Image (cartoon, rainbow, N blue to C red; front, side, top):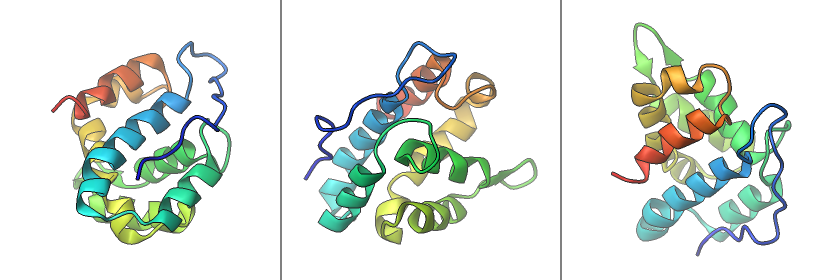
Length: 136
């Protein structure tokens, strides 16, 4: 099962050209390739993600993921995938197994995209950089 993005209208970041729903698309790709293949995200998980929708406003799924990402790292310990998964599961009302599917994308962003994502998680530079995770 894939996330139905057709019913979700894109929102744009105030200062960016690329729509923030692009991050949801990236996450949907990760979901499609990892979670669907392993069965980690249930129909209820997908419904919760679709309900949260795209965008950068409070409560939007990409914003929830970005917020969890920003609280799941430290200079000394790096990116904590378990903490990210727990945060996303709680804030997005999805299962821990499903949330863990998105932790790899967060790890990739931490390892490769700090500079690109420093100003905004939904900047075109950040989204282009994190798209590299899908290309691996």
